[in-house]
Length: 405
Image (cartoon, rainbow, N blue to C red; front, top):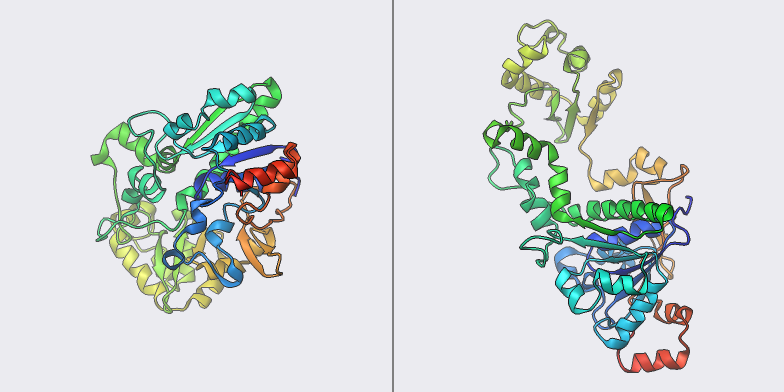
């Protein structure tokens, strides 16, 4: 992969997954990302309850720490101390990007506001990831993606089926990962602007804004027509029966996603051995299928329930209509397209244990990235501070006073 960010230095003062995943993407692209962690506690993700989320696996790999922190350097630094803050500002002075998820109030208390940072580096890109944005009554409220992105922004409500007893719950870091990629893209644009103008930018991405963006069609439709006009369908009465889920005889699921329904209806009828449906007045045209959609969907369900997934895979080769199998993560790992494009990449620990991480989906020069494991807590403290100009006596004194790890 072309290291398109080679020579870019990022100072990351952030924990958990949202903002650190932006740093991971930038590291994938070749940036030098220095992760600042408290010398005692580190990123709170490191201490996440292993029993609750199963974050540690074979080889001692903590996948919830590895995925958003691969490729970085870790410096244990107490930025709340005067000496620690001074060292942080020295690092920022030589950086291109300052990346943080600290709330506005915390940044003010630590004297790390935009003005404080710009005083040592006027052209730095100051990038913030927040829950609710930096303005409004909840600007200083923290928020995890399941609460803000998934629930507050309307995603869970729009994904809940009309007959569902409970709303759907998101998978771990679902919004965080997307937010990090979005933030990395914004940083790239800000660096491009600085290359053209010499001016740094203040960049903000919030989980709230990201969630609203993801349900933009529903939000804009509601703003235009009102919520009462926002039509909701279940899998039993989808307006286009060729955009629906169907279960096979061995309990697997297929999704049909054929927007040009009339074009592909004859193919589907041939695939399910019901050529009589092609000219059946109830189903022959899109309008008729809509009027008789409940009956049409039921007929399709009966047909798909008659054969196992393996047979349907073979039968669907006759059509160019879009369809897919609902795959498990284990199947995704072996998917030929995932393998061929390098979407999941091998990583090796210093002890020689190999595991896999998901690469960010952006590739340059048709080459997947080579990923590097996440750093141990404070692994690069000495290296980074020596590079900053400190000597070993100064480093030992700072360690003795608990300013660094």
